[in-house]
Length: 195
Picture 1 (cartoon, rainbow, N blue to C red):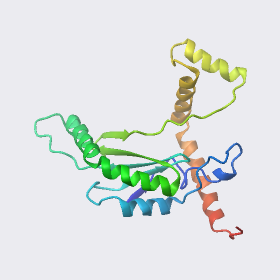
Picture 2: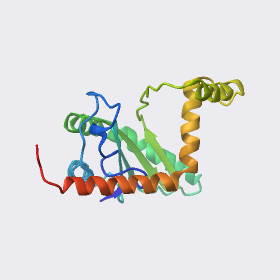
Picture 3: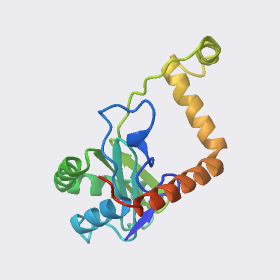
Picture 4: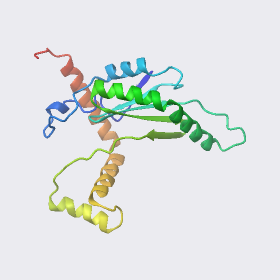
């Protein structure tokens, strides 16, 4: 029932507990198959019509499902789809919150939800996580130029803009890198257990 999101490796970022700069606040590693199985067991069968997209990173699990297409009749199909997503969001809020609380306790990550209906896609309340970094003057000047040019209102907004731009232009490379990291993590998990 679950499809793997092509932009993330099986457990977010393999080796994250060993990554330089990650402190004790990092969530413990998770296995995608275990998380997918847990959600498959918890989600009501009638919520979604097809496979659920599961996206996992260090901070958050996002569950996105496809809701049934409405019959718009003579109405606007896009508005009908948006209305169907809004209805799903309202009618399932209590159950989704209960599932999210249980998942957060189990996996140490917040849970965000989303739905698609036809070509309309909406994410509900996803995390915005601060990322601290130190930048030297050349990097700060890049951000300041974006702010001065009106592309962004602040350095942090300029940094978000730059990360999105890099992501758009390097999707293939990043996907290949994540696939390679997932392969390393899979081989590592099959190794001897010394702990």
